[in-house]
Image (cartoon, rainbow, N blue to C red; front, side, top):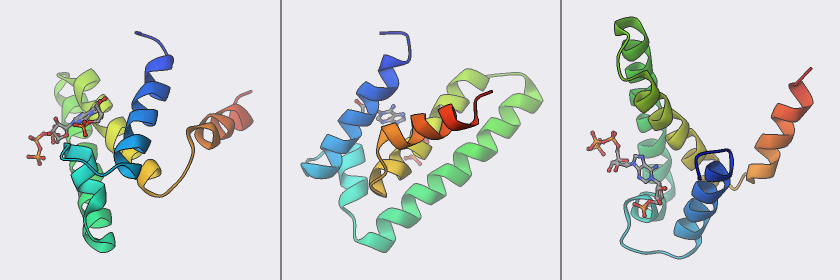
Length: 96
Ligand SMILES: N=c1c2ncn([C@@H]3O[C@H](COP(=O)(O)OP(=O)(O)OP(=O)(O)O)[C@@H](O)[C@H]3O)c2ncn1[C@@H]1O[C@H](COP(=O)(O)O)[C@@H](O)[C@H]1O
């Protein structure tokens, strides 16, 4: 599934982890009390953004670090109740 379908599959998994509390990493992250969950997710975004900058500057691991940043960005959108279609529609709206 090495195409755009993987984004939808990951997103659906994250929505399921949000809605069905379990022991998984992402589910536990989203089940924390509201402020704690939000802070942890936003901290990960800041951390991963820094890692993308270093990877780009050093010409190494840029794919890996970019996916980490995208992953936590998507996780934040799931946590905030945004649907993946809203994200696709926004890209579509901007695309010329
Ligand atoms: N794509 C990912 C993904 N990328 C990174 N991570 C996890 O995010 C965590 C933090 O990533 P880091 O790179 O910062 O790793 P770290 O240095 O150990 O970080 P710390 O948490 O210790 O700060 C690690 O435990 C990674 O395993 C991910 N965890 C899950 N997914 C996807 O999310 C879905 C749900 O995951 P689970 O909740 O684990 O079932 C999975 O099916 C995957 O598709």
